[in-house]
Image 1 (cartoon, rainbow, N blue to C red):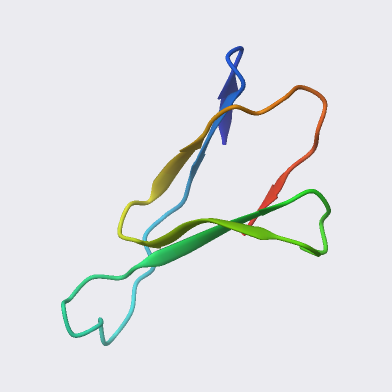
Image 2: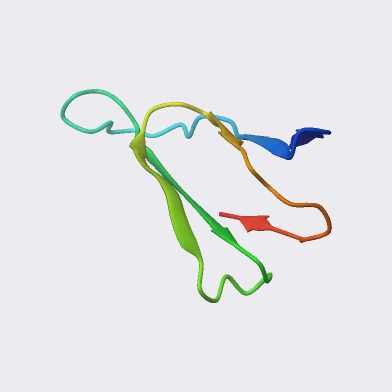
Amino acid sequence: MTDDARGQLTVSWNAVAIDKPSSDGVTKYDLQRATDSSGTGATEIVSNTTSTSYSDTGLGDGTTRFYR
């Protein structure tokens, strides 16, 4: 993850290697954000994307976030 002074954080991950891709040949990802490590109350912020990165914007200072 990388962040900057504008309240933005970029989360990126490696593509998953699978033996049998979905019918369209693309692996899709969902990304959730929570404010505690257990993931309680996690909010889905990206759904069904083929991208391997996401820029989370409008973040305030001082709050720890967890992504899964």
